[in-house]
Image 1 (cartoon, rainbow, N blue to C red):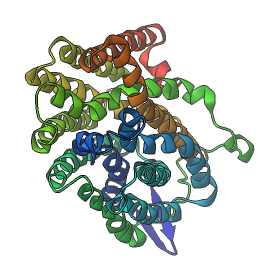
Image 2 (image 1 turned 180 degrees about the horizontal axis):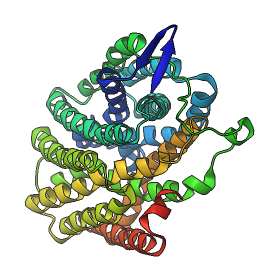
Image 3 (image 1 turned 180 degrees about the vertical axis):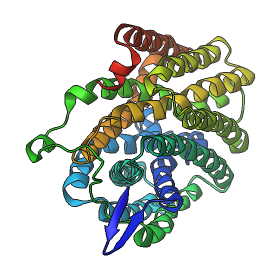
Length: 404
């Protein structure tokens, strides 16, 4: 997108894209940084009531806050602007994100994670909205949305490795990495601007702009709810799968390496999406869900470490295709006036699926008696979703689905 400043025209370029991609990594940091130390946290808080549910919530509860507050962040974005909300959220994110360095109680840590999630809701919504605003041309927009997945998953790989390495010094130490929010906010303050509507963009009346276009986004939002769940199953559970295969909970190096390998596979899937500029995102959905299904079923068939690694890589590659396909589908028909709302609801749906992951996985595991088999059950559900999306494409045609 271009912005006229006096007689000068400002156009978003690579630097603005880099900053927005970096900002998009912050909610991912919240999800994966401390996964290598989850077994340590489980041991540390083992005597706390309901610790088997509450400890995974340290990772998952920010997702609930994103699910609750992202629609409100979307409304603020559309009504009051993008930049100030983003800068403020990043600064507060660093403050509350580092709080567990000094906290000892499980309840206090969970409260800090609630506040982290509120900040993440604003950060993710604004960064995605600004990517769509700044890069108005379809090919540039699709490239940066694909790169958003690539960047966040590559960053997740780095964060997992860093979290595993820092975890050797105790579970408190990885939380220092949340200072990255302030570091990113500083260049954003000088390099980003509040976008004006582009003359080539689609527009609606002010009355229509006040409404969420549910007829256009309901299908993407519902599919994204399951996609958020299936995307985060291995992100949250891979460390426990590695430990259940015989690796010590204190061996955060191996746990982090396996999780990082799966994250790298997700990045490769996102990079492939970014290069497939001529393929409609909905055509990739059955393939993405199918790959997730294959990987998860492999894990269910063999709970040994090699099976966990192979299955996690296959499923994560499918996740790399899935995430940008879902967000591109959702925002492809937005207007400037409703873009923040649509992005907010999509973000809420995705992260609600993430939040439900430990709850649903706990229930499924209790029902089937094994975490690896529970993962395979999710794989079977992914098969159903792959068939359903394929049938929808066959019935309506990919173009009609993309415009739904």
